[in-house]
Length: 424
Ligand code: HAX
Image (cartoon, rainbow, N blue to C red):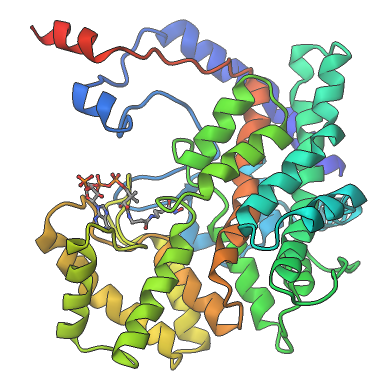
């Protein structure tokens, strides 16, 4: 796949030069102050790292390489990965070349199947995915080249090789986890000639005569691909990778963070909350019933999943895109009706509650309704779907980190005593 490799080889010297010049000429320019609230508050809003693949302006939501994600809804995962890595969308030939390249690397080592089959039957699908990725570490071309004494200017090359290998294999592994964990039958192999999204849909084995589920997967994989650098999964991958741990170690670590209920696991929690609502009120509740249900959740000391965000202050454009897909293809679906009702009522409740800085829906508020509609109803699998997509963001960030020589990350921590002394 010469094209992505060539495009990167052309751009990397320019990126390196831009960064060198910026640091040389403006290295002392201040971009952030840090307050005690921020030091105790998860570093919220502290500008202390760089990510060029995407950004999340609070008032618009995700831009991938400057393009609003809402304008990418007709693109493929291949387009998205290429865009994340290089800053440009591929032409049709380069997109096809990337699909073929990924297909040619999709063979999963047979020991991965054995490891998955040996895991306890009730393992969480995310634990299975992270274990499968980690156990392939021995395949790392970066680790081998590093051990052989590679020049640091070349770090990005075997990182790209590992990234393509890993990205190619993740859907096959993820699909088998679905079939194994939920007793759906034998493993389905990838099919020649299918795209990344079509192959994943095919290997999951969900009935899809119209091809609409594959369309849904395509959208799902594009929308979840990246969300700048500071979220838990991207930041974890970056942090682990900054020690020059290879992509297998780093992506597995990042996905362990995605498995948390305040991050990627929220999509499973979210559909669960909506279905509880459906069960309790035998369908779409009245405004009063839903308001009370939301207050019961909050008064029980729990969060309303799918709402709120650390950075965003508007409805997440990814939620908007999922909702538009659902309304186009199945406007009468009862779960979709619930998603809409929750969208009408919950922001008002959260505003009245007065805690959440952002009362609007995030990416996880609507995606589950789509999966549920197509018969993919095993909630605990949902974060694996998210992971297949988010791997693209983590890997592209890592390729760029290696290309521009990002150093080992090591912020300074302070003690509470030190802070108390500062304010005396
Ligand atoms: N329901 C109830 N309370 C909420 C809330 C929600 N949906 N969102 C935020 N709050 C609360 C926080 O828990 C916090 O309460 P405390 O002061 O008691 O700790 C307060 O409002 C202020 O929080 P915030 O500054 O607005 O939000 P944070 O940056 O701290 O947290 C979260 C952002 C996404 C974790 C938060 O909004 C949340 O827990 N939402 C529900 C879970 C969820 O949907 N997560 C998925 C987020 C998207 C994502 O990463 N997907 O992978």
